Length: 180
Image (cartoon, rainbow, N blue to C red; front, side, top):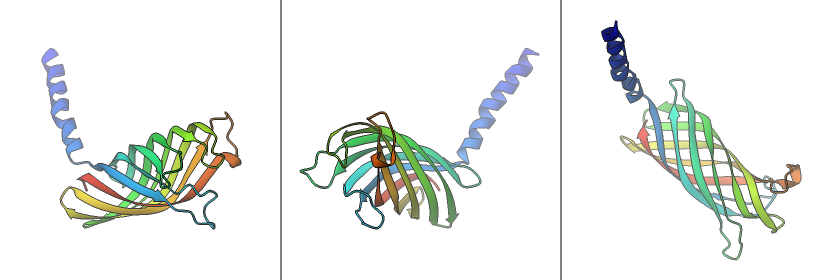
């Protein structure tokens, strides 16, 4: 009986990791910029951000992962800085070396200054919905361009209302290493 249990555990330890070897997913670097457009934006922060991210992909193409980013203003005179960590969820489609994905990035973090009021910042929420298009130039490496809408919500006051949510278009580039 004891040998049977040991045999089952050894078989599980050998077989289960093989399932992970056939999974897909990636991780890498992300860089983007916010752009002011009076039609789609409710503030003119025009910040840039960079960070790291990673995700796994189910057999059905659903992405699940995480990220960490830092925000820095394009205008050196501005003093809005921040950082966020969070989750990635999305759906991807692949054909050959090309991929397309719809993603939602949501996170928690902080801002040094309220972007609009230019007063003390604090706890903030981050959100981004984007469409990305990628191409693999070699096995295990992909370059992605993306665009979408990004929003920040300053909740340092302890209440979340529409006057504390700032949104604007965002465009950027990602590089990823992984199993595509």
